[in-house]
Structures are given as C-alpha cells and as structure tokens.
Amino acid sequence: MRIIYICTIYYASSISIHNIIMIYESLSYINTQGTLIQHSIDFADLRRRIYQTCDEDRIGKHLNLRDDFFVVAAQLSPEGQQKCKQIFIEIEQKSLDDMLLAYGGVELLKYLQDNNIKRAVLTRNREKNVYHMRDLYLSEMKKTFNAEEEGGMMLFDTIVARDTKSHESTTEPLKSKPDPAGILHICKVWGCDQKEVVMVGDNANDDIMAANRAGCGGSVLVTQEGGEVLDTCSGYSVGDSEEEILLRTPSLKVESLLELKNHLEENNNRRSSEIDKKMGRTYKPQPALAHSTDTFSVEVPSISVKSV
Image (cartoon, rainbow, N blue to C red; front, side):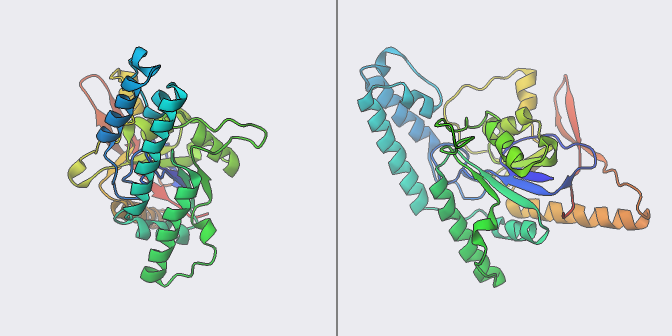
C-alpha cells in the first residue's frame, strides 16, 4: 500500500502498506508544516498580512475577500499581486532558514526505505524547496545510520508540488489540497489504486480531507504532543456538517513520526506472528474506534505493513 503523508483516509480491511505519500508543507506558506518539518510559520500573521494587502488594494478593497490566501492574492490588481508575492517569498525564505526536521522523521524514512515502502511528497510548496528538505534528511541519515547519500534522489519516489503539472502538454498546475488531484496524480504515476495508498499529514482540513475525497485506503493525522493541532489554516472556510466532519476524520492519530514508525513496526511484527501461528491463514486486524459523535461513528482496522 502507498502511504501519503498529510491527509486522511479510512483503512480498508486487511490493508498492507506498500507505499507512502508524504505531504511536505513545513517549508512553505500554505499547508501544515509539522509533518516532515517542524512548524515555523505564523499562519495567523500570514493571513492578516495578505488580507490587509487585499483591503488596501484598488480592486481587492471592493471584494471583501476572506479565503485561501493564494486565492485572494490572485484576484488583486497587478500591484497587489506583486505585494502578496513578496510576502510569500519572505515567509518561504524564513521557513527555509529556520527549517528543522520533525522528531522521528529520520527513523521513519529509514524504516520505510528498509521495507521497500514507496514514498511521495505532496505539498503546496514549490518543488525546489522539497529538495532542500530532502538534503537535510540525507545528511542526518548519513550521520545517524552511516548511510551513503548515493541514490538520494530516491529518498522520495515522487514529488508533487504546487507547480507540478498533470501532463507535459498543459500549462495549468494540479489543483492543491484539499482537492484530491495531487493524490490521484501520484496513484496514476505509481500505477496503483487509491485504496492502496495511505496519506499522512498534519492538517485535517487540507490533508485528511484530500485523502478521503480521493478514496485512499487510510490516513494518519500527526499532531503535536498532547494531541494539540496547530493553526495551519490558509484561510478558506470549513464546514461542520456530518459529511465534512467525516471527510476530516483520520484513520489514526499520532503525536510524532517516531510514534507512527513504532506503530507500523509493531503491526508488521504482529501480523508476521499471526501468520506464523495460523500457518498462512489471512490475518484480519480488529477495528479501532477512530471517530464518534452522538449521531454517528467511524470504525477502522489497525494498520498492517508488508514490504513488496
């Protein structure tokens, strides 16, 4: 199964993880930053600056826009768009300068590599910034595990950024999360069904919703210690209907990438033990409650991991 970082999806029965899509947002101005990289952007301040630019713009002041800040910027006058561009450049550069790897990220990536689990990055950042993050991980993995940097380009099998196009013949980039276009594109590149993919991310509104809309096999939401979810909202409105709550509900919550790595490892070992005990009989994990309200609940089975 493919795993995608930063999005939600419900695990299908007896799913084995063969691939992981990692959603990388920590370097960029739009998405959650706490999955592969520690949070460093003040999203509340970013929204304030873009909205203020909109209110002072000769076109924007008549529109009263309060939406995704990329959407807002695109509707302003040429001068207003240029001001927003400079704000994004400033914030992106600061995130690069302050970049720190997420706790447990090195161990998780090493585990995925060792078990031949494919990995992808899905981000609203620019592709070139993903390479900066990749190089930091390669350097740390070399120090931690004495791993060679040879083949570093394959630390991530696929990268989909906000400037990635669906086809060479088009000039339009793929739609960003929470639209499922990026996930579906990765599945197409990998030649797999969405149900074979698990998404891992730190933003339920963007990542988990995109994963569920795509029909992924499962999703993991990475929170802060104690389950705290930081403000990584780009500004669009979020509904509270039962359907929208379900779309934002992950299959699993963890407080670090190390916890996720340990969870995958434990389930893989348990699955192998069960198979040995049952002499090849299919192992069906017991479901665990993922979400519950007074009116509905969602049950998903535990994750199992299997190398290809």
